[in-house]
Length: 246
Image (cartoon, rainbow, N blue to C red):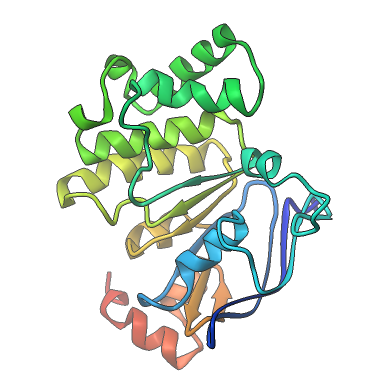
């Protein structure tokens, strides 16, 4: 088997006396598409933010290619370039064009020249169907278009893993499909991804593994077929009950 890209070991996160994550363990290998499902408040988004070190875990380890990224000697900025994140609220720079949103990380963080960054941005903006909008500002775009730009921006950093934090939750229903189609294409191309989502049919059809979180723990994990057709945990069964006949 390939070497693990990410190993999450005994991860914990508390806010005051509120234990949001409790002893989370899982491993990500190249090509894995891991969907994380569960009710609101189960710790899914906090887990992603801890993996990206936007939140500092209260305990445990995050091993990236064998190195604990939480050790103070390690460079979190360089790590984030390898473990990219797409947010539910897009997080684009409103004062920059679509093209500049995609090139700034390549030039400022990866220290690549502008021509290289420009070519890379055009490649990924074309891939997500946003090349005609390179000179537009985010305020001129629909929610679905903003999210496709955000995905292109993340791809420009050429990450080893992409984290998606409920990438369709801020979108109007008619725009959800266009973003899911982009993620589906990335899956077919072998991109390693961790996706927090409420889109159950999408999680079932695209994932290689599904994790069900409940009250800060991984209550159950397995193949999508196992989780969606034969869940073992009563809480998983309860959560998925309305999807079981799909």
